[in-house]
Image (cartoon, rainbow over all chains, first blue to last red; front, side, top):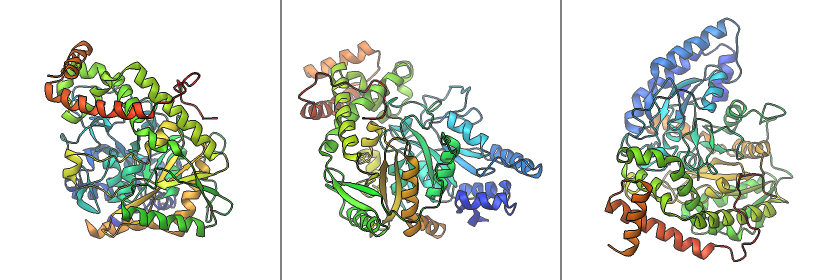
Length: 452
Length: 59
């Protein structure tokens, strides 16, 4: 039964459609795994086993009536606990939401449920996707339980890697889907700004927030995206299997993204670039001199917009926030309007520079994170900057995906980030799929059946 | 308490935030570091350079 918990969404979908596996079987298999490992991995804040079983039985009854909702019918999913859900409590890893009643589901939850998915529960996150993890524990890296798996969609990523969910939702304000996907050896997508609805996602920064999927393969991400934000013309983001990158122009930034990398991360990523070449891609160096100028600008924008959103609750019950969240989210109160605008001007210059650099390219490729995962003690006391290579595309709005591209000598997964033009998720997913088909690092998570 | 800390304390009060001295010290360090970095990066020419009011595809 446990093997079912490690199958990709695409595989389970196929088995459900052929009636070889039932929604109840797959749900029970994953719930069993959650029961076994959630205390250790801290993947979920809330598990809704009873609701999941009820939904799985309903999906099964639908199938026996001949009602098949589509490829996600009867497949379990976990939702990051910053997405509002009516049926299951939403904590955002905070005590500040303890007495809040939710009246509407987040739009992505509605869409995935309409597609037939079964909700397993709410996954662990940094408090309000920005603070600490003192209330419900720190999600652990399945590959090395001494390390943190995030953040902030850390619970979603470790659940997908460790067989505690075939797929999950996450949110990404500066890299919070892509960084944990990279650390955990799974796939995570932040789509074009505005494509995936953020209604019902607890806001952190209105101009940098994204909701998106995490899964075990690019094909799975395509299926999830078809439900979360259907392609406006074709309904499907992945139109065909993709096996090579012939004719594709890929930019490799000269500045910032390859500077100061951990040596093991650099070794793995450089090898991945060679492999993109082997697949027929035309790799070119591109200049992005402003790429190193964005840390302060993104910090100011995020802090000011986060304060704007949290101000009311901070005034009313700031004492219920954890220390790190209270300080981070309050810090936006102390920047001036001039500083927020200056940050916005730096953002505009970056967007112009990136648009110009990408004019003759299909994609830009970078490491997702510059460092391997850090020990939990480091995350809890002096968290590193894991948005070092990702915040750029929250600022610019471009779609970006992290796919597994190998392991460090210590056995930690490394992620490769691909970035496409606005609304060109199809090219992004096709390129990512070609890479993973040729070099299936994404199947590395299967080792976790034995490792944990 | 330094003038900067006094300003932070007064501003926190004005904003209606209950932050203690330790909170303000940490926030102060955090924002000073960011402000110093922002000064180094701010554009020299600013006329006509707007913050994106509503994020849309760059041209």
